[in-house]
Image 1: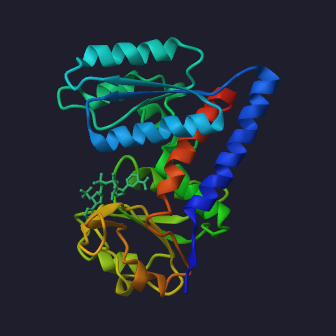
Image 2 (image 1 turned 90 degrees about the vertical axis):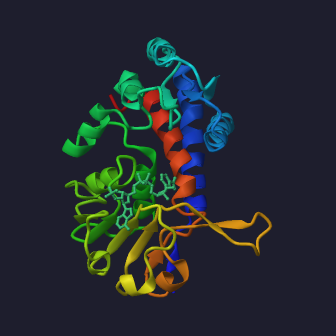
Length: 293
Ligand code: NDP
């Protein structure tokens, strides 16, 4: 049976380290990390994410600003607010909650965030820094996956990492992290996507399998080899009339069959999920400490 990689426990360890460093930064330099979050519109899921980010700030001793704007806010106003935060020295991290309403050009808004405050790591400058191995902000979910592997002492050097999914927020950045010639990376990386003809052919070769697909339980026991390390990023809602809510959350990996063959696996929920906010807080702390740029 596989070791369960406990993302809740690891994220709690990281948050406790962040809290200590935050106290030190304040006592030595009177600096409090500040995170500013912008939410445009009324998307209920986005609203929950924004609230949990504000709560995390509070529990770690960060300053937080949450600005909620109506759905019909013009793009220029959104960019004006980002620019005010760019110029505000008490704001160390800026996050614009995605998705934005259709009339707002997401790329334009993300480009307006100063790279040294882009704690989500979505700005092309930070993406480019990751690719060429320079310090920069790494987007939070892939940074969280890297920490899970590192803190679980999983050997990556020379291992074959197969990533299913090539999104800009998960698949591509985790691939870029894992092939770097660096400690806890140095893997051989294969990326699969919808044009991959025989997905199972590739997943069966994986020493480390990262599933970031968004398809419930698409990867099953027969698709992996014995001893694989599995990181399941997927968060999928499936109908389940036997539960109170009428649904349950599952990953991209069929946990029961895959965990019988894997040496280690992240559960859903409780694996990658809790790491994302922890890494957002970590990036904001790094920005406040001034150690990235
Ligand atoms: P996207 O929809 O942006 O990307 C999905 C990727 O999977 C695409 O590259 C797509 O290929 C590929 N794909 C889809 N179907 C198949 C298939 N049948 N075979 C092979 N590849 C396929 O999703 P995200 O990366 O944003 O998210 C992936 C999952 O991770 C979702 O469930 C999401 O909810 C979850 N997530 C979880 C987070 C967390 O904190 N735990 C954070 C972010 C995401 P193509 O490029 O060809 O379309």
